Image (cartoon, rainbow, N blue to C red; front, top):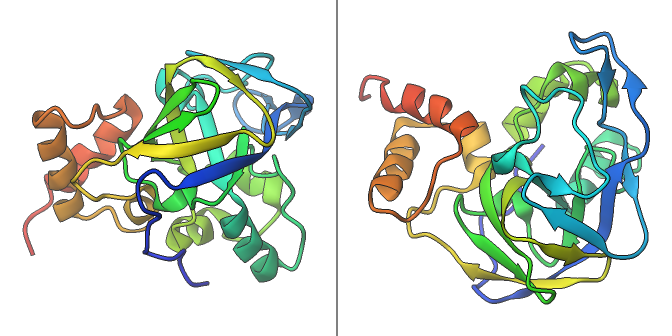
Length: 228
């Protein structure tokens, strides 16, 4: 499967939310927690976005999901269309456990630390890629899904809530700020190189970004690799 396009929408380009999704029901899961909240489905009307995510949404495995740095998960219509062709099946909003399905922007190409401003006043900040897990693999029922999803680099983006407020399907937003380090979430998932790790650490040292704790351990590990 080819990766998503490396081109990136110009700053201030208007994008749109096509669906807002939250947990429909907890499902039984053979993992350590015993249940999963990955079953997200679209809801109608405005939904409040708070510091820890969408009102009415939950995470079953809070050790690995949720929290301020992974409050909202966004996935793009264009990446979903790529998977649909690759897998020969529909990828409806919420199937990947995303909270926001968006169009007009490729979330997997989002630069870590960029900010999305919604017409309602909500501001979200990109923190890290979605790192696939065994629960996600069981959800998809595809052999080798974790490695496949990782290699493809079509990660979608986790976001922290900078300014809370309401979002709903049809809401427009713009990319109002993009840090200069240039490391995109999908690139990092597929190829977490030493050079990209150093760029992220330098950007944090310069005050451009605040690395998510869940990302920092991967960044520190990549930065410690011997130079090639």
